[in-house]
Image 1 (cartoon, rainbow, N blue to C red):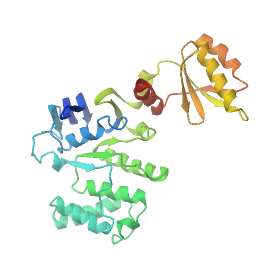
Image 2 (image 1 turned 45 degrees about the horizontal axis):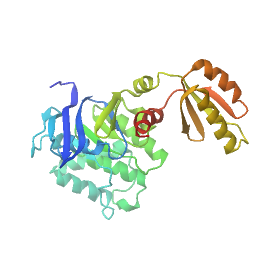
Image 3 (image 1 turned 30 degrees about the horizontal axis):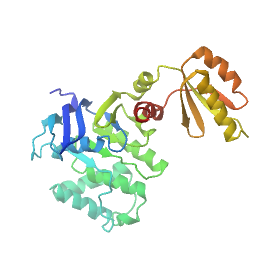
Image 4 (image 1 turned 45 degrees about the vertical axis):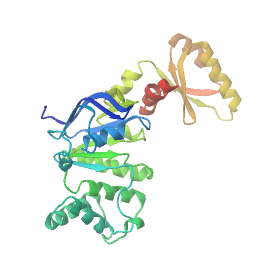
Length: 312
């Protein structure tokens, strides 16, 4: 057991009957780290998190969370972690304060302690609404922040956030991630899943899951470097180009042998260069149709290549 790690997982396997949801994974998360979990639906992310929170019993393997090994029925892990699920779990017909007091009572937190803690969390969130406001009357972004407050009422060492910004506005997402960074700076370990790949850039390290296995684990910068040793170019269609002209030129690039892959990227295209000399010839030929420039890979590029590319 390494005291520098908040989470240590060795050979974790989780099965439901004959189905293996998590397949022999091992990883560690440092104290104070923002650790991201990426993967398609059904990859095993939520199942892993629920196990680390003490909600599911491992079929095989060893799990240590906040210095405590998992034992079925043992509350030692549950007392030290906070969990914010994908689904909004607070009550819309209760006020802000009623929700937090209810959450505190479930945790058996004394009145004097939870009243102090609620004030601290309101200050942390910058919450300026009345605490008598019904939750249903709050914007979605504030509802998610309130759910974060409920998950951290007991001041846990490790906070698990399962797609915490799903369905909120870009501005609310950025505000929520500012809160995540503050939690990490205060020494909390934050374990987060997200389908917004631009958000994952803010994690210290990322584990990428596919069909129950971890297929890559590193910092965003290192994942990009390892996944894309080749040159990457971005093509942007010139104004007034027809779709047929664009597709015709893309087909010519493919047939030339210059590109290893061509992927759509919004209204643009990313070309992974296979043969640099051939690419130098091709890029001159496509000037009437595309403007082009070298670019750096994003986490979306990494995800497409490691996960979706394999599925295709």
